[in-house]
Amino acid sequence: MRALQQLMHPDDAATARRLLSDHIDGRTPVFECELRMRTKAGPYGWVLSRGKVVTRDAEGIPVRIVGTHIDIGRRKHAEQQLEHLALHDALTGLPNRVLFRDRLGREMDNVERRGHIFAVLACDLDRFKAINDSLGHPTGDSLLRQVAERLTANVHEGDTVARLGGDEFAIVLRGLDQPQNASAAAQQVIEALKRPFDLDGRSVSVGVSIGIAVGPQDGGDPDQLLKNADIALGRAKAAGRGTFRFCEPAMDAAIAERNVLELDMREAVRLGEFELHYQPIIDLATDTASGFEALMRWHHPVRGIVSPADFIPLAEETGLVVPLGTWALQEACREAAAWPGDLRVAVNVSAVQFAEPGLEHCVISALAASGLPPNRLELEITESVLIGDVESVTACLHRLRAFGVRIALDDFGTGYSSLSYLRRFPFDKIKIDRSFIREIADADTAAIVRAIVGLGERLGASITAEGIEDEAQLTRVRREGCTEAQGYLLSEPLPAADAYKFAFAKKNVAAA
Image: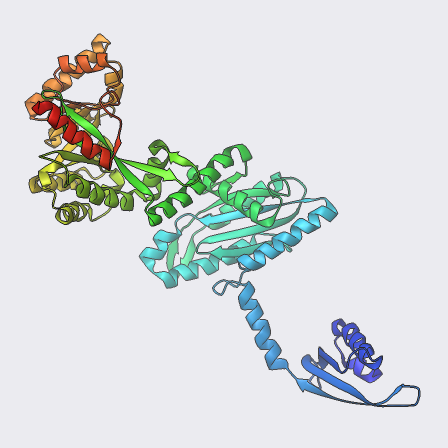
């Protein structure tokens, strides 16, 4: 046994002695142990050692033991490879999310014993997607490998650099004296990744944005720390990229709430939780409904009614306004097809929808599927639609108008170039922003409204006054010559069934 122990790897000897002792003392039926033993060539090799006492003397002391040593080197090598693959990123060889979380958890345990602080850096490459899309995935992979090398070269021994997925990396900085040490490390990483990368002779530049959470003060567990670092990363990217931001609970709480709302909204789109309400637009000459504006509503199963002021800007920022807008067009056309007479439905179209291909097809498909005549659909756009690619947007609007769809300029007067847009495109309707209607009792504001009405008359466009909230405002917009009015005084936005009843009621009253 002494000769056997001399061949064992020192790290395995204690375990082997314990297991052998258990068998000799009768606590286990056989001896079985995986251990490393020195080979004739010199290095250690893995073996499976098995043995059994077959003869004991009168006092029970083992006299003879029979056993085998089986070479398990290939199996152990395969197991180690599988273990490595399970815990490391295949592309860069860095720890993956699983191993990163484990290392982060261990660091939190060390902090409790030693009392120092540490930091988690959430890193996101700034221009990786553009490079990956333009130069191809193999080039993108090469870039990620070089990024991994630079990150590893710019941290201390014992720190952990991990790839969490895509172009997301994370770093654990151990044993910091103060949070400012994390600032220096983050800036060093930013500077390192600013330098151009050589990708098969092509010089490519990327940047990195970093969010920093300091442990243990910014989170009580690994998941919370990484989440807070990720929220801080969002602020760094919003600040212009190529910079870092620390976790700041007061500011980051709002961002966290926004992120949760975004996830809820994506789920609501998938589950079809949105609905349309319809606010009547009243023809002031006949006091009947000339149409309805379709307004999106979201009844969250937990939050209740979510204000459009909260979810519409977020939908535009995340691009969710595109599928939502497509659904709204289809649903509004379908509902309006059942309305009496020539009632129109107005649907708001975002600048984001114009930036994406396929808007014209979406409009024409919605009309075809519903059977609604094109002249009963009105698309409401704001000046923001015309700020970007003016020629392309104007051409699209002309094609839609030629097809028969009406085009309205919403929130007129709130932008910087309203009159220039009116010269570029013959809108069917101009909607005066509610801010003018609210102040219409003021002589100067009334004069502006009067001028807009006169301009609309010369251009052949109808004029709708938005936000009518009391009788005095209604009287004044009539006096100034507005052709239509819309607002809570006349009716709040109605569910589809109630809008249908409202339209019939108004026509019956007018007929009487």
